[in-house]
Image (tube, rainbow, N blue to C red):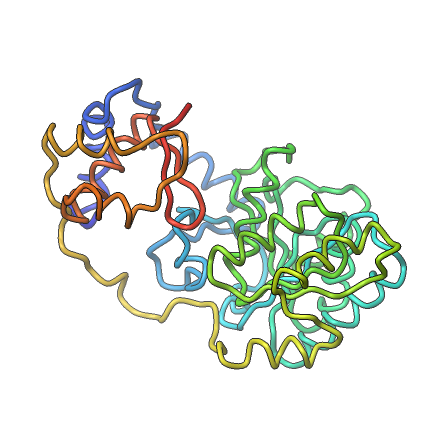
Length: 336
């Protein structure tokens, strides 16, 4: 939109941009299918929030893989509050569940929005502890999907008193591949992520790793070295995560950050200068530097000697053509 001047002009240019990148261009959904999806969200009582609109979460907007569109259900004013993520094991111990619930309650009572993934165990405890004062659940499926089944009442309560967020359209059932994408949203929304209990290879550690890549605080609750469910947290602390024993510890760790998570209200996003035009030599030079190992875009600009707007334009063409993959931390690689 910044380059072509309007949404309609940008959409009209997509097929040509994809062809410039080479490879098979992906199918572009029709206006009818998009309208049908939007109507379905409205019937559910939800709404769409597009990246670039006023109100899109500012911290989430800072990450390279921020969703272009979110579907929301519930109290959107909660996006104006500073957020903290609490995640952990699904098969958590009773003590860890109780501690997560106490942490979430203490944080929400003091004005923080508690973000989690509505999974069993620690996620559920975090939502239960903060539902009265401010909680937000990021789910892996569509707004109309209840998962896990035992959290049906909690999910409906959050959609009324809290805020429910999904990236996938209605009708999407959560699959294993969806959860890492969900985790990046949780980490991106929050000023910091607290891991209460986690095994060494759990999804909670993926969320913590993403939070670190996004430049956010990573915090962990220590546990017994005899409990496998505490090994992930102890490992995080050994690697530099902040040791957490109370809500006060979290607030103290995040106090220099402060601020909310909502974009400043205004007439729209700041306008950037139009991207530079790319020629075949620029495309060839950038393609030669790319490989299966993710490379930071800043490094790509440095090594190619090509202007940043032109590099970004070429990467967009390659992405539309399905030739590259984007990774956390502003990195790209050739699609294998």
